[in-house]
Length: 54
Image (cartoon, rainbow, N blue to C red):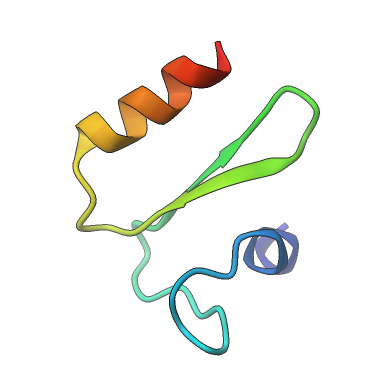
């Protein structure tokens, strides 16, 4: 799962590394990874992305 998530949403680093253990991934109902949120991103950013999928 870890490798799949990193491949689908590589993030901002060249090697798609997860910078810290609070990186979050957003997966839609079809199992597609549609978002990646780094630890410093605000809950409001995540909330709006989740609401778009509902």
